[in-house]
Length: 148
Image (tube, rainbow, N blue to C red; front, side, top):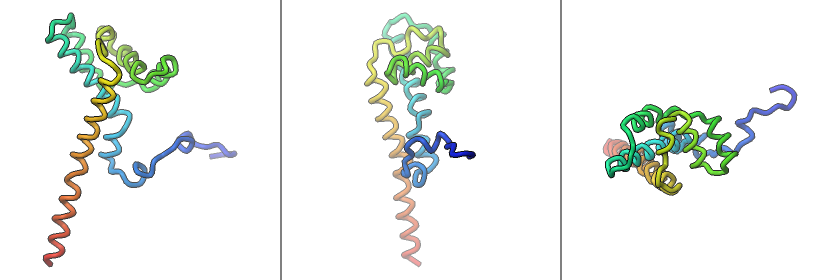
């Protein structure tokens, strides 16, 4: 870096829990990408359930949502968040931008807690699935060394 310029990555807090100690799998589990794709999966499940209950939701709308689960425009989301000052609504609009037919039904009848709380539970459950085998492997290794 020339003349005192700093990379943007050094201008934000970085947790040593991630940068030093987390496995790539665990770091992804708590990433923005995982969070927002999980929100999108939850909105898709919601739409399928609402359709099953009789709401006017088409297979085309659901298919459009399913086909765009990972198609996230993070720059648009940041812009929408500045406008709405609300992360969930920013991502409702961002998802709607790549799913124009599904846009009217994304987050229909839900609260922010629907995606936020359920995503927290999913991420914690997935984190336990990543973490729990590790102590078991340590136990097996320790036992095999102790037997020698």
